[in-house]
Length: 612
Image 1 (tube, rainbow, N blue to C red):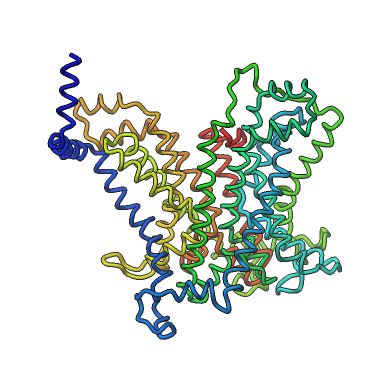
Image 2 (tube, rainbow, N blue to C red):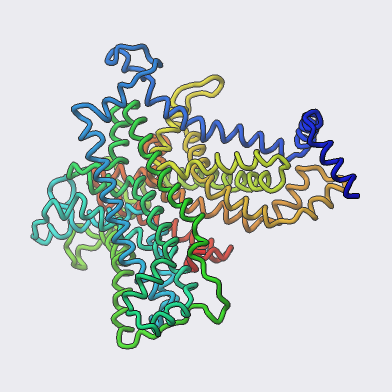
C-alpha cells in the first residue's frame, strides 16, 4: 500500500499529469453553483467598488474636462498638474498641508483623550463594584449609536456667536460674549471627537479587562511592586492589542469625519482633509479632489494595516488560565460613590445634555430664554413660520417627510441588498472549491473599509458622473445613492455572512441535493431560512448606520434625492438652527429605535464589548 501511494504521488508530480489535472479541476469547480456565483459577484463588486477607486486614482493623473485650456493638454491625457497644485504650489499650504496637519493633530489628540478617559471607565465597568455598572455598560455606548455631528449641533446651539448669521446661541442670548475659539475651531471639534470616541474605547477594552488574570498582578504585589509598576509592566502590555485597535479605529473614524468639522470648523476657517475635499468638489476641482482623496485612502489603509499587523501579534499577549483565574471584581471602598458620580457626569455630558439641548432648542421661541411663556410647539407643528424655504413645522413640513421617506426607502433597499449579498459572499467563501474566488471576494468587499466615506463618495462620483458604455450617468439619481450605500455597507455584511456560513454544515444542503432540489430551491428553502437571524442582523445594523451616515451622501445627494442627514446640513447653512436640530432629533430616534429593535429581536448587545 505504501509503495502504491508513493508511485501515485510520483506519477501525479509529473508535469504532464498536473497539466491534465488543472483543466479537470477547473471544469469540476465550474459545475459548482458557488463558483459561478462567485465569478458573478466578483464582476459586480469589481465594477461597484474597485472600478470607482481606479477611476478616482486615474482622475488624479488625467486632465479633467474643463481644465484642458488651463493645463494646455487635451482632456483625458496624463498630467502631473494636480499633484503639483496640491503638493507644490502657492496654495498648497491652504489646500493640503494645513488641513493635513489639522487632521493629524485632531486625530492624535482625540486618541489620547479618549484613551485617558475610556480606559479607566472600562476598568470601572468591568472590574469593580461600581453602582449601576450593568446599566452604565449600555448607557455609555449610546454615543456610538448617534451621529457625531449631533454634538456639533448641540454645541452650536449653546455657544454660537455673531460670527455667523441666524439666531444667537444660548450663552450670547444671556448677554455673555462668546469668543470665537470657544464657539468654533479645534477646541469644540476635539471635545466632541473625544466624547464620541470614548465608547469605542469602552467597547474594545471592556472585554479585555474582564479577561485579565489576577494571578500575575497578585504575584507582582507579593514581590513588592507598586500599583504604578504593576499597571505599567503587566496590565498595559496585556491590554496593548485592545488599546492599539481602539487607537487605529479612532484614527480611521476621525480621518473621514465630515459633519463636526464642517459645522464647527467652517465659520472659523478651520479646515481638515474631509472639508477640504468637499470644498474641492463644490468648486469644480475634481482633479485636486482626487489627489486629496487618494491621500486619505493611503492614510486609512495604513491605519488598517497597523491594526491587522498587531492583531497577528495578539498571541504574544495572550494569557492561558481557567475560570478560577478570571479577573475578580474589586471593591472601590470610599471611592465607590465619587466614581459613580464621575461616570454619571460622563453620561450626562455625552448623552443627556446634547439630546436635551437639541430638543429644548426646538421648543423655544427666543433662544436662551428659559421661561414657560417662551416654550412653543410651533417649530414642530406650526404653519407659516418666518423661515423662508422652511416655513412649516418639522412634523408638518413636506421637505421633512420627503427626506424621511427617501432615507427609509433608500437606506432600506441598500441594507436589504447588502445583507443578501453579504450572505451570498459568505456562501461562496464557505462552499466554492476554488479558494481564490472566496479570497478575492473577501478582499474586494473589504475595500470600502479602507476609504473614508467622503473619499469613497468621490470615487463613486468619478465613475458614475458620466456615461460609460451601456451604463448611463447616474449622478442625481436615487440609484447612485443606493449603489454607494450598498458598497459602503459590504465590509460588515460580507463579514457577517462569511461568519454565519462558515458555521453552517453541508449536510442539509447535500441531502436536499440528493433528493433533486436545485440550487435556487436549496437557497430559498434551506440555506437562507437557517440563517434568517444572521441575515436579519446583516440587514438591520447597516440600516442603523445608513440612517445616520453623512460623509458618504453629502456629495452624492441632490435636491431631488434629499435625505434627513443632508437636509439637516442644508438647514444649518441657512441658519435655521431649530429646524436642523429637530431633524437631528428625528435621526437619533430612528437610530436608537433600530438599535433597540436589533437588541430585542436578535440579541445584538454591544455592551458585552468588542474586545473578543
